[in-house]
Length: 178
Image (cartoon, rainbow, N blue to C red; front, side, top):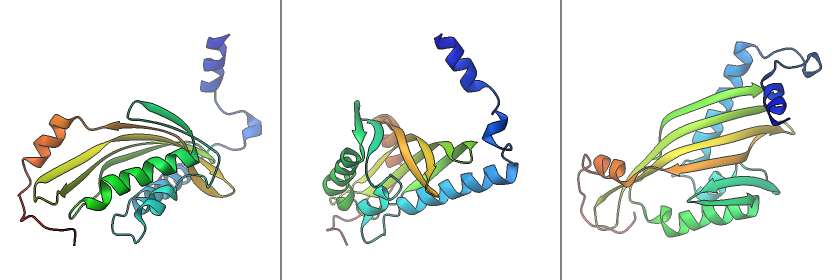
């Protein structure tokens, strides 16, 4: 029975689902999601956590797996985002959020899966180079004309990879956050 469910999920869309997506429609949806993601992670915004949370539904169920934990509500995603920003993000000196790849597979006019690789090179208040990063896979659904992340999994960059990137960055003078 389980294999029948998997096979049916791989079947072509039924005629009731409407006409198949055109290449132009798929490209447009992918471009829209890429634009939403890059705007949400603008570290120069006046309210960075609000930007990061702008891609999730305003309330309700959001399944998120990160740091070995699974949460299932938008409120808990909000707590995690604000905790990151309050504990780490706001103290980064000259951070640059870099998207190394944003791959979007469009499933339908109202669903897509994105896998993105990112790095955030920055300096600590002691002037030491530091890099965080990882890979993020997210299921996007269009609800009421708005694209929202409903499920996600984040995997941190291995520390050895971050250290290799840090070795290519110059040190800067210790400073308070500008």
